[in-house]
Length: 226
Image 1 (cartoon, rainbow, N blue to C red):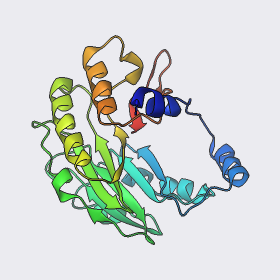
Image 2: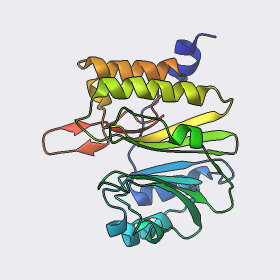
Image 3: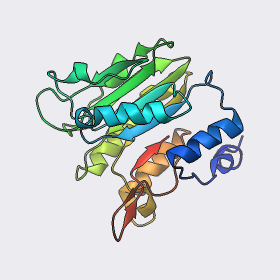
């Protein structure tokens, strides 16, 4: 009954980096079962401009993910219909009155899903935070984009309320996205530590524990799946 020992410790495995060819070799070697729910996340920074390359990459993988989540679609009412992946249905949350941001969930067309309206209308105190949540196969799946530079204290307060709502269901839960919260700095930044502690308190755990973005002199862990 001790979550530190029986839950968190079991999940303390290092995440790994793979090239697409290495991932395909992994699929062949392990015979992944496509009957299980699987989730892939991209931070697109304008999906429409990369749509052809995006679809080509998806098709190059020897595994068809159940759900493909995308942050920073930069979609609007005029171009949403162009964001389509063959073999997938989609649910988009776009910023219709301002540029940037936006999130999307693409669901394999053999699967049915229910939009979680109660979660998709959560307020983040006027911050430009985008969320999209669906229910599928007794699992709640969400994608979140939080822009950099926002008030992390306010976000933490609102995100805690959101996790409380998610927790009222008996569903399993997967939440992915670009949080722009660098987990590598959690020991040096109090609100980052508060965010991580709140995640733990809701029995969630970050799947990724290595940097997801690199510059010439620095690296950060701001994209994750919980």
